[in-house]
Image (cartoon, rainbow, N blue to C red; front, side, top):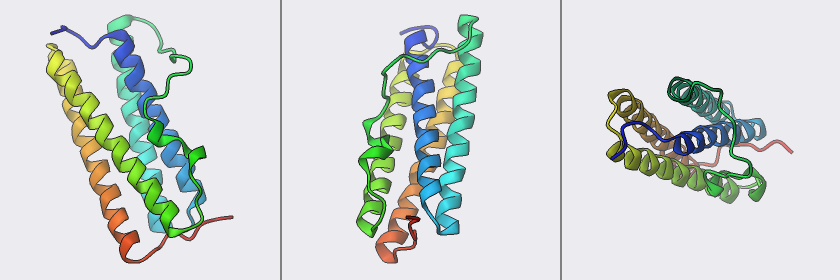
Length: 156
């Protein structure tokens, strides 16, 4: 068991939050439906807040600013360029990938939680797990809506 979050692990977590933030923002720019667009913008903003929390912890532990690991991709599910976005099946594929990415983040943070001793890290990781679970739930709700009645209205 390690006392604190390791530097490389923390850098990967920060990059994961940044990748998720950018993914949700990119998707929000393509959606016309106001409620769906708002959901993606909200998720992007929340991922940004997570990134800021992790960067703060990084500075506290390592007394330096965060630097990205060049070429590191936290989750290949969140690569916007692999998706089309002009049909119901595209929207379902994006949501499925986002739900899987949230599951991966939950698993990542849960595994870290089992390995750290510092209360600050435990509290941070527990709150991130709760947030990622709420993201997953919101995405699942959107997925159910789309399966019921396609509502995204894609911008060309």
